Length: 358
Image (cartoon, rainbow, N blue to C red):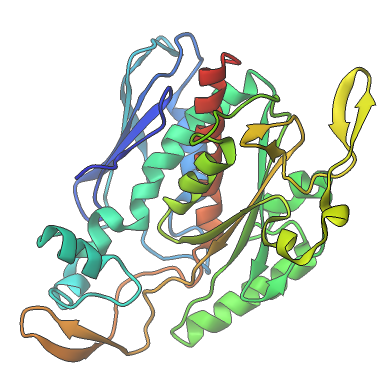
């Protein structure tokens, strides 16, 4: 299976399946001398792991990371960094009832059509569990970005039509991690939580929108014309199974505006060129311009729901109705947010290394 490696200078290869023995990642291209510990990785994995609250799946995984190589005496060696997390709380029994019956909204059918053989337990390689490997790699990327003072913020701005008010950077930095849904508008966050719990009681699920902001990104990152910074960000976000839409800056809002309304005019500030507005989201011509990079992603509702769903039996060649059992998130947004942070960090580090900034 191709397509398991991301990045050019900072290369990340993930491996493992949801109900297999382990999930892991190999990071190649990390410069030597970076202080790195398992605690640095664990901190990010703990933000993503299941069973955190009443609005996430109750699968209880410790997600304890082990660094196998690439680090000696607390510093990176410049050699490949291998990390692994062993799966502990596995219950595959509900999935054997669904064998040969692809779940609507999942990759079961497409994996079968492409490979004619796949791990149907929990989605196998296509499971959201694969993303813990990305978060582990992203933790390293974040530590590298700290060296050039780049900060990535992320917050939930919408859940099933319930939208947060406009927030300042200070509010996002202060409050995003204070609510279960990672919404910095704490009053709206409570309404979002109630909406998720309501969907869960109905045997259903809901989606939402995440906003990411990268601060202090140096200008000049991005390679024209096919390796544009925003193009790679788009690919990074859409490689996450739950993400179905990405916009940079004003995004789809450009389609409803006139040119005179969206141009980011320039001015000088202490010898640096800045823009009065940031409709472009910090990227022009695929190259960062020094303004904050703003990305929003649309996350679909979790397709594993308790309601009856129509599908086909691939073996018997007949239409059937299934009911999906097991432990699933009624809303994947709060956990996907951590994955989105990691993927943005991976893109920025890769381009920073390619541009000689790191």
